[in-house]
Image (tube, rainbow, N blue to C red; front, side, top):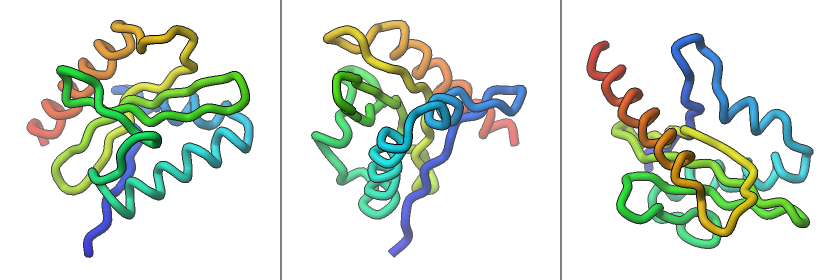
Length: 119
């Protein structure tokens, strides 16, 4: 069976905001995210809550991590070629995911797709 790949979205300058956020976290948070990366690579789109959840009215999903009193999210989408592209990550401080985070991820998703069509 072909496995999925988890990839970090890169800005035009080659930097990756999600990879930067991931690298800045302590070992426990990194391990929890790595566990979800592994689940996604092994089981693809069949991974569901509590690890991931869809974001209503978008093509985006969110990875869900809790570590003590901190809550983290990574927004991503499923791409052709069995790939998950990690678009935006943040520490959650409000009950609902902020609309600007969803809009940023959606903008990056569209940019990623259009970049792929230019190749």
